[in-house]
Length: 531
Image (tube, rainbow, N blue to C red; front, top):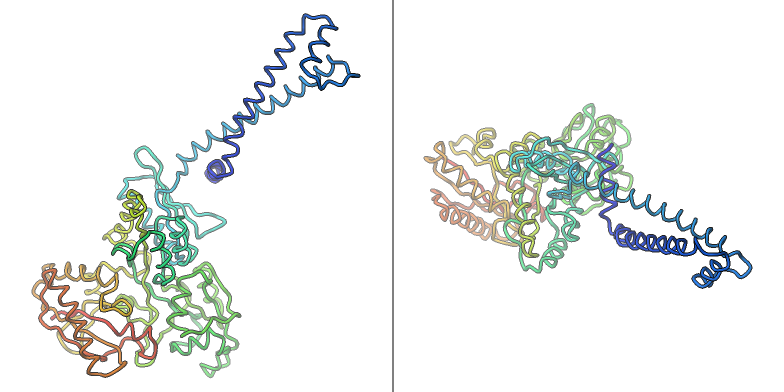
C-alpha cells in the first residue's frame, strides 16, 4: 500500500505538469515574503507616529485606500489577510518539500526501471518477468527480488531487486504484440515482445525512426517456440479438426456442433483473444485463410481467463497459447497433405505443428541514436534469455527452448522410417522471397555447429536435405531444393563442419499444405540429419 502511494507520488512529481509547480511555487513564495516584509516595515514606521501622521504616511503608500475609510483600519485588515495568506503559502511549501522527500524515498523503494519491456501478453505475463527476476539476481547481483503486479492492470508487472547501492527494476507491459512495436516507434520501451513476426509497415516505421536501411542481426531474436492450441472442454468428443473446419467455425459459417460431429451438442460458443493479441494474429493468419473472426465471439485480454471459460463450457471452443491449456483439452490439427498433430513439444520444436509460432524479443538499435548504454543493457537481457539459465526458465514456463539442441535430440527421436539416420530437431527456414536463412536460421546454424563439436556427435556423418513447395515444374523445384541444401552446407563448411551428403528432395515430404502461401513458405526449408 505504501509503495503504491509512493509510486503515485513519484509519478506526479516527475510529470510535465509538475514543472508549473516547481517554477511557480518559488516565485509565489518569494512574492509572499516580500509583501509580508513590506507591510511589517510600514507597521514599524507608523507605530510611534501620531494619528494624523499615520494617515498621511499610509495614504501616500497606498493611494487605493477609500477616502471615507479609516486608513489604520484598512491597513490592519490588509495586514491580517496578507499574514493569513503567507501562513497558507508556508504550509503548502512545507507539504510540497515533504512530498519531494517521500518521492526521493520512493526512488529507493520503487525505482525507475532499469529496463522497460512492452508487447505480447503470451511472453509478458509470466516468461519475461521470470527472466527479469533471474537477470537481476544472476547478472546484476541483486537480492530481495520480487515481482509486483499492478492490481488494476494484471498484464503490467514490476520486477524489483536491491543492488549494492541502488534499487533495480525491470518493468513489463503485456498488452499485445502490436503494442510492443508501437512502443519502440514512440520510444516508450527498451525492448519489444512479440508472439508474431514484425509486419512490413512496422519495419518501415522503425527503420525510419533510426535512419537505417536494414536491421542488424541482433534486432530480431527468437527466444522460444510456442504453439497456438485449439481447446475444448474435456467432455467434448471432438479430437481433431482441419484448418478449413477451424476457419468455418471461427468465422461463424459453422455455428452448431451437429454440423461436425453428427451429435446434438448445440450451439458453438467462440472464445478468442483480443485484437491486440499476437496469439490472435497468428491464429487468423495460419488458420482462417483470410476470413474474419465472428462478431459473436467473446474476446479476452487474459489468456488464463479464456482457458478457464472454455474448460467450463461443453459447447465452447477457443484458441490459446499451448502453455495455457490448463484444464481444457487440446485437439489435433491437420491440413491437406499433412497428418493430424497435437501441440506436442517435439512437433513444435521443428515447427511442423501447423499452429506453432515463434516468440520474439525485438532489440531496437539505440546506438544509432547515441544511446549506446541503453542498447548494451537491452542486449544483455536478450542474450541472457538465450543462455542456459534463460532457456531453463523458458522450459519451466512450458514453452519450447530454442537453444537446447542436445536435449531436444535426446527427447525427440526423429528417424527416417527404419533407417539409422536421426534428425537434429530443428528446421531451417528462409526469409520470404529470399534465398537467405531467416534470423532464427542464422542462429540455429551456430547451435548446430556447437552441437556437432561435442564428443557424442563428433563421429557422426552430417546429411543436409533441402526441400521446396510444389508450385511450378517438379524438375525446377528439385534444383531449387538442391540449391538450398548447398547454401546451408556452405554455411556449415565456413564454421568447420563438412557435410557428407548434400541432397535436394524437391517437393517431397511437405510439412504444410501447398494450397496457401503460408504453407508453401514452410515447405521451403532445410533439415539436418546425422548418421
